[in-house]
Length: 322
Image 1: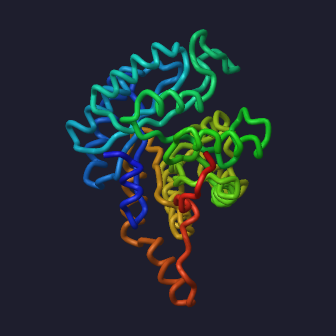
Image 2: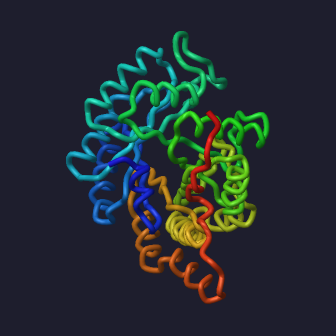
């Protein structure tokens, strides 16, 4: 099923998981274990990443096919412009279409390993907007999602330019957005406000990564230019040397982070699982039990406030000039 249709028909927030294609037998075992343990939570959909330089292209497609076939879970393939000509991109999209994949997260992609700067492949595409335009023009079977950056894309010249490019991608055909990780919800809410003011009218789903390893999260923040709030970093460092305490604190922090996002109107949570299940299972179970989005609606009703559109959901469509 198309993710835009799932979003449109649901009054409650959606919960989704992100996996990556493993490269070792141990990694494959971790992935299969996580899939078995997370399946009972009935995610609305899952996504599978695309390795740097397109290195996991075949595995990404195989895993997405297997998720739909073996688990009955709607799955989305990440797809990038890296290291591929336009004809090669079309060949992969043909393969995805023929495999019954309906959802694509269209990304420019990161530079291949060993390269610091993005370089367009000869005969390929330079921007994710161009990839969206190709998908929309030649592959109407796919619903297209995209990435958003609450703390601004690492290569953007300014926050204003970042929003302007995001608007162009949405206008080109993106139906929903999933954010890069962040650890201060103020970044998400401010970003949504700025995107809406610029006319971005699609659901903006926050991506959340439970912290289970200090050095791991610091590497992730360096790669994505996400920031660790000083208080969070201080509490993590106070637990360095005790991995269990780090993981317990990380689950607690992410649970509170998700609860605030959902109470504030986020249309769902996209969990970055890192192919492991315990943290995501604990957080999602607590969220569904507490249902902070419903508590927020009841609180507003108790204060006599009219219901308002959730800030992360799509705005009503506005007429466009032809």
